[in-house]
Length: 220
Image 1 (cartoon, helix red, strand yellow):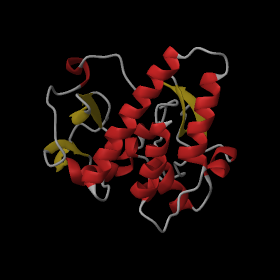
Image 2 (cartoon, one colour; image 1 turned 90 degrees about the horizontal axis):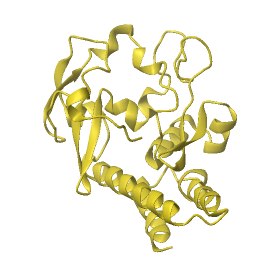
Image 3 (tube, rainbow, N blue to C red; image 1 turned 135 degrees about the vertical axis):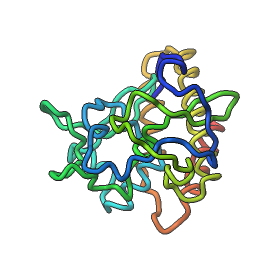
């Protein structure tokens, strides 16, 4: 999800690479769950998030939607899934347990793994930046970005993240240039079916399965 702010407003003014050290460590949060509350529909999921989640929880994407822990919303012009916040004063993430801990920590989405870092996209690549006003913990320690995002095969993952981001940008441009009635609905339903609803094989490499779909759809 894109944000209309300047880097000076939200960051420490630096950009980081996957092997850089950044002051993001929070000591396992120590009971704090502020970042799991009041997030609205901002925790948008990508296909790898859904792959990890459905394989880890052993529930289909459609079932997670029907159970009300995920929902669909328009994000930057494209319909995408996101974590659903429970209704009420605290608006807690549906996966937050009574002790204030993440019940799907091993399968948590990329945005959750990233926080309080963000991504700055430029020239068909991206760097990481530290969001200085988001985490309530004021005594964070330095940690390597690669360790912080806690995702196997960082090179493949970064390529996927980049390809997915710019693919969505292309879809936004396509939809802006094709205003024929029903086009947006057809495109969005097709993308949801191909990238999220069609099951991935948990015993096989995600990236191979994703790029088979990705390349086919790019051709269309």
